Image 1 (cartoon, rainbow, N blue to C red):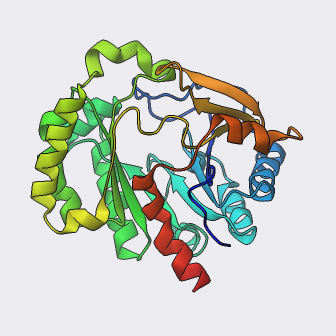
Image 2 (cartoon, rainbow, N blue to C red):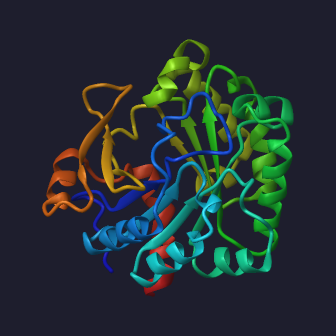
Image 3 (cartoon, rainbow, N blue to C red):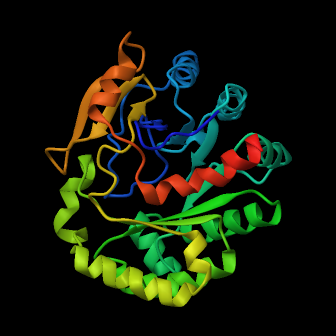
Length: 292
C-alpha cells in the first residue's frame, strides 16, 4: 500500500462512545450513547478498509473494555490497516493473550500520562490511583517490546509540570510522545475556564520540554496545538456515525454522514483534509517496515 499524505485523510479514529471507566472532565467524547454492537463495529472496521483508509485508531472510552477488541484489531490488520489503539490502561491486563495481541496485531498502543506524579496526573483524570496503573502498563509494554505512545493533555492545571514529566518520558523511551494543548471541544468545552491555556503558554512549556529531552526529542516528540487537529481525520462512533472537528466552531463536532452511506468517502473528503504533518511520521516507519 503506497501512502499519499498530500491528498486526503488516511486515518480514521473509531471511538467507543458508550461509556468510559474514567471521568476526565475535559474529554471531547459524548458518552452515554447506545451500547456498542459487535456486528456493527466489525462492519465499521471492514468499511474503513474498503474506503481506502490506511490507519485505524481505536479509542473511546477504552477499546479494551470490550472482549472482542482483539478480534477487531486482528481483522483490521488482516485487511491491510495499520492498527493503533488508545487505552486508559485500566482494562489492559498484563496477560499472555494481550502480550501476543499488542506485539503481533497492534502497531501502536497509546496510554495517557498527564503529569510526573499521582497528584498531577490523577487530578487531571479525576481518577485516584490511575498514575500508578499507567506507569505499570507503560513499563510492561516496554519490557515486552511493544511499540507504545504516551499521550499528554496540557491545560492550565498541569502546564507547569510538563518539563518535569519530560524526565519520566525520556526514561520510558516511547515510540512517540504526543503533547496536545487542551481544546474546548464537545463536552470538554464546559470546563474551558478551568483548563484554557493560551497558545504562547503552551509553546513556552513545549520549549522547556525540548530542552529536557535533548536529541531524543527530535524523534519522539509530537506537538499539537488546539487548532492543528481540526478537520485532519474523521471521527467515527461505534454505530458508524462520522464527525469532524468543525472548521467553523472550535467547540463543535460536525456531523458528516454514516460510514455506511454509499458516498461516505466523498462526504468525508469534502469535510476532512490530510493528516497534520507532525502525525504523519508516527506511521511512516511502520509502513516502511511492513512493505520493505
